[in-house]
Length: 162
Image 1 (cartoon, one colour):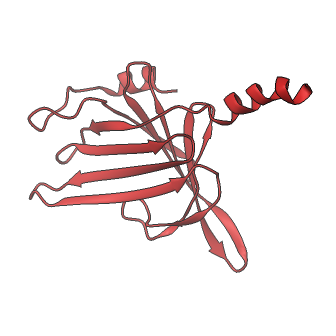
Image 2: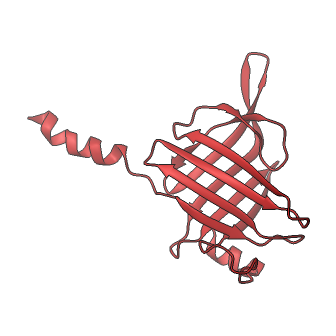
């Protein structure tokens, strides 16, 4: 009888995580918008494509696939960095993606980490941590129209992302 009372709690608690699936984009200072494409399968796995377009129209897709279990696995590297180990898991409503490297027989976390979470209006807040510095960007849920996005100023980001 006790098992029947606990089972619903276990079933609902085990699968509760936000679904970040969607297409997002944000403007850059020196070129076309960056697209962030997220595809998530329940609370099991997530794929993030970071799509950059150079001014000469060359497209670069960086695809990252993660199991959402928090275990470090090989990854292709982010933002031009060399390949490294990354993990992914949800902490509350936030996807936490820390990086690590192998030194000898040890896995050591580096100073780089990415966090993603959805705002109430559907936009995606991206937060990068590198060696104690924090950089926050809002990626708009709506894909760009004619290659441009509505402008956002730094005050908007500070007010809307935590």
